[in-house]
Image (cartoon, rainbow over all chains, first blue to last red):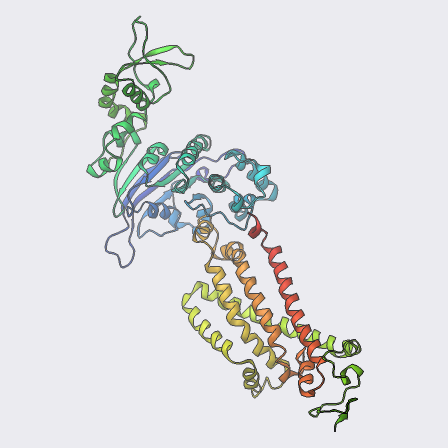
Length: 352
Length: 243
């Protein structure tokens, strides 16, 4: 067994390596229902990557996620975490190794924030000092002041704060895998975006394998290293990195689901720094200025509001890096398909 | 036998003994003299017996209801029959229930009979409140507890029961107040508790101080018990007041 994949860290500050996850032809049928909820779902999530399950309601995305920590038992197929089948493990022990965040968060109202975060370490029998240290470390990690927060009750927190505590609680025992079921679904749009950004920053530090469920394709594109689009009946429509999904949707269903504006969405994935800009060749740069770290989509928007005139791209020190024109952006849409797929590794296309 | 009142009015005694207290003979409703003279010989022992009767009844009732409630929580099929049987028990008039139980051999005219009857009145209230408290635990909390790897037992003791506490204690409060009142009737069969002086006063006819003193003690006892349970709930559920 590949023990290191699921090992706990020695010190409480280090994060254990993430584990790869593999679903092998997993099917879930409910008795009395003709159509399966999940049909022959196969997915591979490399260690440390965020896999987003997305699809319309009835596509079984939450069911698929709950199969992984055996909140639901599969009818057939196998699920490997760190190379080891989850089906041969005791469900409660397995779940202590998998972080779990749900939309309603489910903080225990009768326990303080500190006690909530300590839930899994407590179940695992950590000693008091280690739990206390870990608790404060996690509160800081999610941007909450331990002194101020640890003795409060969930009812005394705002929605965003509760969500952060939910993430901290899921990370408490340093699990190699995190399952997140629409974790930001109940948060208002402005705070949602902040929490998404925070989570991406956090994920850059902790590098967990994450399975993230959402019905929002924009959230999927933002959060996912890979996106699995499911259709009615739990059938995998396409599994690919976001750029590839946008440039080469496997079929009409995927194309429709990602939206008619998929070209624009694709431009939002690229910054001007990734683009070969037009050199001014000695000409005095004119027009409005746009920073190098802007997305191509934002640049396009600025060009359009400027009446189609080219923009001058400048870096952080205000040096001119080049020009961006409408034609350049238009050309990008043609080549983006190739750029997208080589950036994030190979693709597992949808069913032929 | 009758006693001539100072005014020459004949007061019927309905077979009771004539009072030796001036204020009673003066036909006053309440005689503090009597209370202070009889506190240690009549009222205090009756109060202690009453407390014991009630504590035992609520404790046994709680254990039975708790076990049944856990069973019904896991297996819904159990809930209806328990509600039905405890509901029927609850509707039997107390005096009738005491009388019905007396002919049963191991019971007879004893405090055991009284306890059986008192316990049967607690079951419906306690069972219902415990089951309701458990069922009202939010689904997402239960989901999170399971999802983090709690076993069913850990989930029950660490999450579900603590969250059901307000409802459970509310049930204990109602059951306790009910039992404190009903236990006075139990004196018909077991000669214990605050019902004894009340019964004596009823049979006496003239002498009302016993009735008022013992009745007042029963009311005070119920209020104290209820107050203590409120304090207990506050101590056990600090989170309920955190807002």
